[in-house]
Image (cartoon, rainbow, N blue to C red; front, side, top):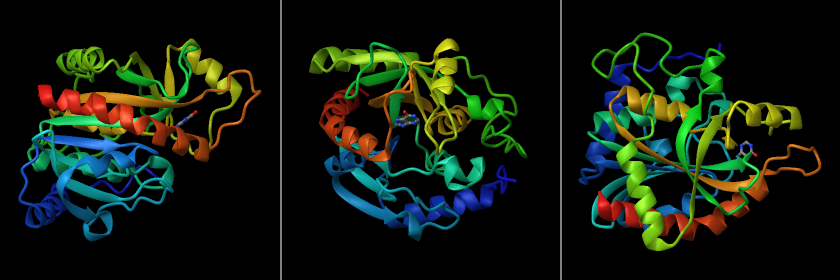
Length: 280
Ligand code: HPA
């Protein structure tokens, strides 16, 4: 079934060794760029590029709109490791494979993870182009039995039963709010519901998600955040609202729409992230 293979510590460390051999930067901050948001990697100065295809054990990104490489370099004078393109569960990889990049970041000594994604708006006030600070998430895929921590626990990486009461770091959230005030770029706040995809939601799915407290919905991020928290990384999450979720069944959602909205949001996201990085 889809929940295997489980990656082991040797495989994780093999990947980390390749990255160390290819880049002399020592990033403490990781940044994952969601659908349509990959253009943000262009902001990285003096970059080292490592295509995912050069990394052992690394799942390959198959989705249009996800470039599939690591970009390691300087952003606002900080060493950063950027994932330009991410891996999704719906591509057929196991949860352990999907979250391998987070384990590698942990072994490379990263301390902070900034996750971004494209998401559909469930909150009635949110509109395409909005940025939303993720204050909590619904681990719906995990609740269905696909938690990324299922399998042998690697005790050297984190505890068997990790707490998830504050997945999204409160101090980092405050930093993001401050960045929003300083840049004048509004930041919504809300709960991100993580689904597996790849089909978009039915109107009944969306009414269900609204009823259980979701403000935005997407197909990524939550497994990465769980593994990052298991490994002790601090997490900041920002969703780019790419479309209004279709609660009444009268509009159609497409991947092209998501990518196009992403491109429009990149400059805003870049400004806010630069401001956040200056404060870290
Ligand atoms: N649903 C799920 N995932 C998404 C959406 C959506 O409406 N928009 C962008 N990613």
